Structures are given as C-alpha cells and as structure tokens.
Length: 124
Image (cartoon, rainbow, N blue to C red; front, side, top):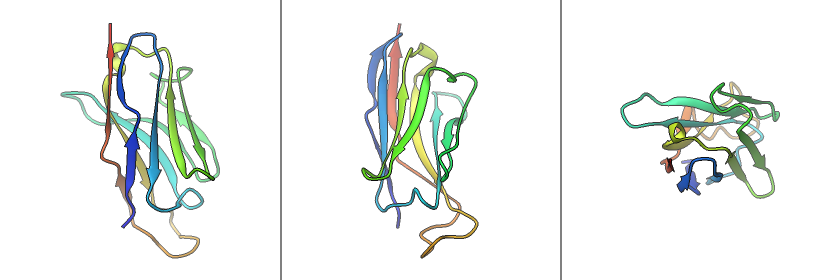
C-alpha cells in the first residue's frame, strides 16, 4: 500500500514563507500526477497546485505567483514552497497522487490517494 507522508507545516506570520514536503513510501513520480490540496476550517478542500508526471504545473489563482510546486526524483520528494503567505492561506495541506490510466510497471493503486495532512497557520 502506497502512503504519502507530509511534513513541514507550522506557524508563520503573514508575509513569511514556509515549505511543506510529501514523501511517497514508494517511487511513483514517473507514473503519477501529484497535487497539493488544502482545507480551511469550515470550508471544502480545494486544489492548490498540480504537477503532472511530465513536470507540467498548474496553480490556483489565489496562490499563483506566491507558491511553487516541485519534486526531486532522486530524493523522492514533492514540495510546495509558499511565500508571501496570507492569513487566508491557513489550512491543513494535503498531498495527493493520482493513478495513471495505465501503469508503467506494476499497478500500485487505483484512483487517488491522500496524505494525512500538515497544518499551516498564518497569523497577522
């Protein structure tokens, strides 16, 4: 069973920066698109950023220009670098991986899997 483990959350003042990471229990970047989602108290989970297995990235309008998604194949790590943080960025941040239509190699999972989440709190 593939697991995603996030870390790096914490508390920061508005205008500050924070970097969260996600490490899959097995190497999946060549097969899977990855994404960061977040969920603020009382709100639905929302998509923050994606990176395809080919390296193409997308960002929500609310974080464009402030957040950067990246991955390191050798370190088997996905990151979300967050800068110019705002109080409205406060949320639990989740890493997600999407299974491809066809696996290159042994299929490891189907659908989407989630990490346990890491709390990011931005204070004014």
